[in-house]
Each structure stands twice: as C-alpha cells, then as structure tokens.
Image 1 (cartoon, rainbow, N blue to C red):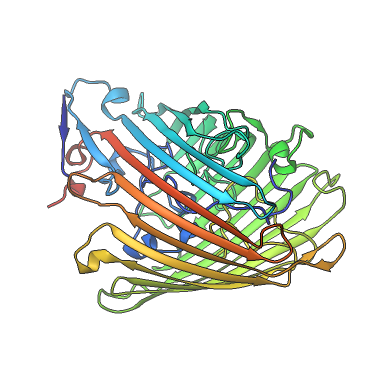
Image 2: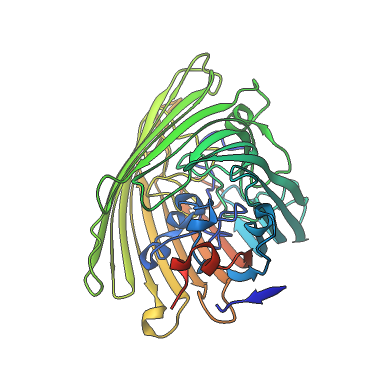
Length: 481
C-alpha cells in the first residue's frame, strides 16, 4: 500500500516574545505546505525562521515538489481512484517541547509537553471543490501548576486538543476561496508556530496559489475569531487584541507580494479592527543572487504603522505609532552574518497579538518595540554541512535596546540587552529525514526588575511524515536524478 522513498495577552509588546522554531519542520503548521528556503535562510537569526515568513505553497499537486524536511511516503493508487482521494495529502507531526524561564518579576515558567497535529488536504471534486482539516494537541508531561506562561499548554497548564482547521475551498484558476477555520500566512497575521501548536483563525479569505511563473501573490479576507497558541478556544479578534472581553469585532485584511525583478521583493499589507486599531506594513528586500563561491548579500527595510481608530476601544485614548527596521545579510562559505536596527515611535508600543512580528529585531524574548525604543544587533551562524556534518547548524545573536519610555508618563525605561544562542540538527536525506532536534538559550538583561536577568531555555524535538502522491505522477519535472 505504501512505498517509502529515501529519501492575557500583553498590553504592550515588552512581554516575552516568540521566536524561532518550535515547530516548523518545513510545513505549513498543519496546512500541509511546502517550504522552499535557501541554506542561508535556514541560518538566519531565530525570529527570521518563523514559519510565517515562508510562502506556503499548498495548491494543485501539479506544482507540489518533493519536501526536504519531511519523510515522504507515497500513495499507491489505481487510475480509477477519485481525485478527492488520489490527490490528497496527509501530514503527521509528532513534537515534544521543554521550556523553562526565570521571569524578571521573580516567578518561573516551566513545562514539558508532547503532541503535534494531523492534517488532511483533499484533492478536488470537479477540479474545483475540496476540504482541509487539521487537529492539534499538546499534553503535559511535566507542568507545575504554579509555573504557567510557557504557551506550550493553556495558561493554567492544562492540555490543548482542538480541531484548529476545518474549511471548504473553491479553486478557480490560480486562486482559492476558503471559508472556515484556517491558517493565515501574512506578515502581521500568521500561525506564529514556535510552541506546540499554531494560531489558527475563523474567517473567509481569497488567496492566490503561489506560482513561480507569476510575479505576485495576494491574500484578502475577513477574520471573525482567533485560536491562540495556548488556547482551545476561538475568541473574537477584538478580544485577543485588547486582552479582555470587549466588543465582538473582527479584522478585515489585505496583503500583496510583488516581485517585479529577479531578487527584488515588495510586500504591502493592512488590517483593520473596527473602533480599535488600524495596522499597515510595507517591506522591500533585494537579494543580489551571487553565484556559488562568492559572498551573497541581501538588504531589506520595513515599517509597521499603527493607529487607533473610531471609539479608541484599545487604549481609551487616540495614539499613532510606528516601528521601522532595516537589515544587511551576507552568506559565504557556510557562514551567515546578519546586522539589523530598528526604531519605534514615542506614542505607543506596537500591538501584535495576531502572530509573530516581521521587524528585523524581533528576537527570542524581546521585540525591541517599546515606545521610543531604538535597537541594533547582529548575528552569526554556521552550517556545518560545509565541513561534512549535513543538517547541523548553530548561531548566536545579540541586540541592545535603548531610549524606551512609558508614553503615559513620558518617563524613561531602563535599557535592555538580549543574547540568543541555538544549535540545530535537521537532516534532509537518509533514515532521519523529517527529524529535527533544536536547543535554544536566551537571556535578557534589564535593571530595575526583581531579577535583572531573564534566562530562558528551550529544547524541541519533532518528526514529520507526509503521505502524498509520487512527484513523478503529479509533475515529472520534480523527479530527482
């Protein structure tokens, strides 16, 4: 039957932030997706590896290539099998995750959890209609009841078990209409898959199906609710933003990515929550695409603009703020070097409760996005595949932030610094293909707290299996030599 081919929410952004990877093993966090990242991209600082930053190519199997970070098992079927089953994808991700942090307020957050998800994406009926379903779970192995806050489990350290995605889809040409519970993959609204399970949303969306032959992609829609990483429940988008039970408002959003020239990428996005906030985003990046053996450079800049609207239900008073950041990245001989800086407006921190942030100074614990805060940092990472240890990589990242203020009093907030260290093993071939082991350490230093340092350690192991039709059948051009 099978053949295995070798192959609540923080009012201000100063709270501990997400980060890299607890679970992104190359797939659409339960969306049965595709990751197409370069070796340099794999070695970027922690936050830049968020799955939400990747284009998830979940569409017709005619454009579904082999997956380097999944153990692929190919369906065997007869030509008479209906396309609904013949062209289906089934993904299983098993994950275990340990997290411990000594918080700056003197408390501790600690848990060890196990779980993962099972996702099914059907083929199309009549070349048009299909379904997508994904179930997620996280069970406590070790979870002291007074040490919550890891986001691996619920805030009171209970298990997570939820049908996070259930949607119907209508494919028309190179676009798809979706309705129901689903993943959203945009810079400002995204899965934030860096714990046990991702954010998912309820809504109606229209998305383009990514295609290398087309130089743009888009996503538009209206979202009613969000199920956050540490929850079993879908709550209104307005409640997630405010951290309390407010008015039942959803979020309308739109995003477009445009690639007018080879190496040049432009992104624009906006979302709006009635009577609360409007948030806009713009980004430009250029990849010089140098040949192998020559240092390759990538430069980029982006800006988040955010303001209160309508009745100002978010803060009670009007505000308008921004965060701008820029980066320079160089990859050569297995090394990736990364330098970034950012600045945030004086009126408010950035509210970002719908996913990981796209600013270049978003680290494992801090986003360096307090009101008035400036930050500069750098990272170095190395791919040991260049010296005969394929799949092994490591890196370090340090950022200094200064000039933050409390916008309500205009008083200064002490400077802060963060150091991130990580090492990862994730082979792309051989008997362990689909396996990933990663350890992450981070520490934040800031005076004036109960603890002036906030050390954090994460240990993640996961394994991904994808059941799919053979690439030689869906598209002969994807057969590896």
